[in-house]
Image 1: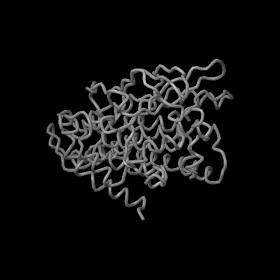
Image 2 (image 1 turned 120 degrees about the vertical axis):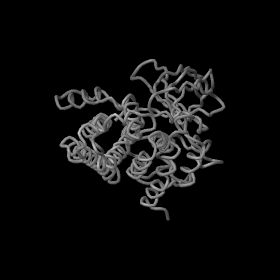
Image 3 (image 1 turned 135 degrees about the horizontal axis):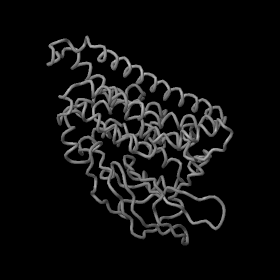
Length: 388
């Protein structure tokens, strides 16, 4: 029986190869096919996939431990791994008919996404006509389906935001991913031109928020009763932990034996060098501890059939949004304390620097709205975020 530790060890074993492929990954602007093959051969995409469809059905913490480890080898690989793996978890929340359509013949099928509700949706008999353009669909070149966001028209009541599950035959990929960081994620645009999506291939945001989705009837493990928003936001913030860990490792290796060209002193003896190492190591440790604590608390509650309070969910959401902000500061300090050599192309610190700044650009890693929501909750205001 495969254990969480074995999966982390498999990820660790891939790190040297991922580092060797970094230049190729950047040049391709997507993950190399051999990297996807390695991840699949190691079973890593199946960490939180339902056991009834060939998955390991493990704790999200295992997913994030694997993701952090992969990020020490390649930020783009870790990013794609994280978000694509979460899609296997979300598919478990769909009507089982949709799960059968995706995994019935091939349990290794992968799904990309773009959740921004930019789609044009028209209700028709049995489902919806669906059109639009969606950006930032990480890993889409390697996926056979896509999750795409849109609002279903309603005559009255709250907005009905949904995820629409669309097969690759129903969309095209616009190869427009030319960026400075996370170059290898291949986060290209998806274009859909008036296709039919049946009702069972949609998932309501409100069902994920309430932890009551159609898929819960067949996937009964506590794992699938965790709030959708809590799982997804961590998939786009956790790569930063591995990037910061690798940045600290590179900095220590180089600073330990480096002699300053300006005055021939040992860089390791400089107060700033010592301080940035201490601050980096401590911040990484703290962020890992918060991640583990949050998911342990949530898992304990859902396993006991108890509710996770809205104030706690708001707190967890804000803490996820702060991960990249805090670790971007860590990497910036390590980078600026590394001297002029750090700015050369091919330098690992430069790659981590660019990758984490790209990660910060993701909507879920902007702490402004989650912070205001958290502050408002402490002041007696109502929750305004249903992605928690």
